[in-house]
Length: 339
Image 1 (tube, rainbow, N blue to C red):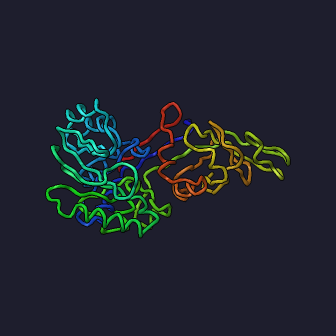
Image 2: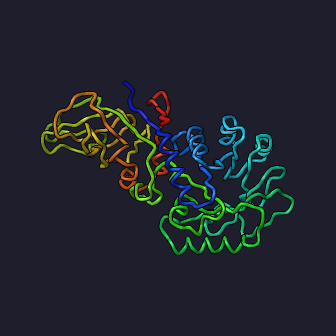
């Protein structure tokens, strides 16, 4: 029996892509698969998104895009992050498109100029396109998940700066923008988190018609009875006040179940159970209401145990948790569903 199993439902990815395309009302969907598809598998997710109607795939780095080029020889691939000088030749040979995120723009291949409209990160303050093949102009929304006024200000700034441009693709919206701000969609939207069925707003994905694509399962590897005053885990952070059955799950922070997830819930034999004590590198403990058998199934992420609920406990976002879940075959099994 494997310590845990990750299941990626590519059918859910396709349905999420179709949902986003319906929301975009004619704007193109560009699938963001950086960081190995937010931990879901970049090649698998890119294939599902393209099959559902996405017209481009976006990565953070040239090496990420080169992996995709081997699998998708004709797909439109855009690198969103900066490219080192030595990578530009590779990008040119692989027919990639690069974002010009600083004052310097690569020559000899299609370029997307990035305008900083308020993210305060990559991008230039004014558009200048001399001597390069500009096929797109882009920016990035800083707070479409939480600040409507600032988002609208960015949209207006981008519209004004690009109003006179012709023959280029204008793209600004991320998942949150695509779902909630029609005026941000322009010609294309670069959607990442929503493609995986996770909410950019930290709420139930079903609110926006999204279906989570990732499921994470494990099992009880050990069950023991603690007497009053006995503890489980490093630092004795949880001490039994009465006789309590606990179950040990062979998953820990080395697998991506972070230390700050103590107190969250998982489902053991279909029932919610609280994670107690300090999460170890390779194991965590749950409080049980009765003795259960070794091998009892545990759902770490899945139906009624959404990644959003774990993110709230950890004080972070689903993006970080999804990217941190380990899929090494040395520690877990990975299954891809194509239905």
